[in-house]
Amino acid sequence: MMAANADLQPQLAKATAQNGAVQAEKDIVMDHMTSGKSEHDQLCAKVDEIQAVMLIHATDVVTSQALIMELEEASS
Image (tube, rainbow, N blue to C red; front, side):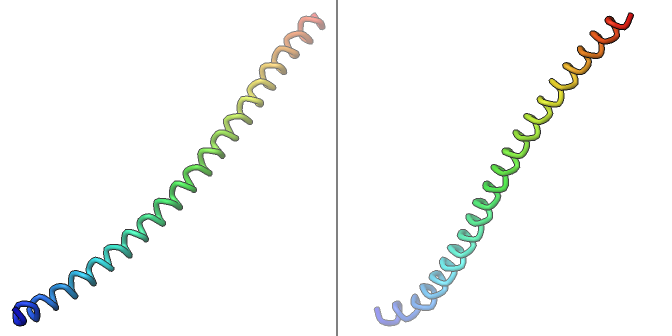
């Protein structure tokens, strides 16, 4: 039994070290995912902001075009 235990100790040490390495990699991946999600959320907010500005500008264009038409009709 002592011999079997002595044979298994290096395997256990190796498995423990590999587990630690996998946990470290997992932590790195999770950090990347978290920062990626944060960046995604920021970009989505920026897109929403840009779309709102575009809508305001489109409304301004339509209003300006209507005013131009009124002025052209009035000057005829």
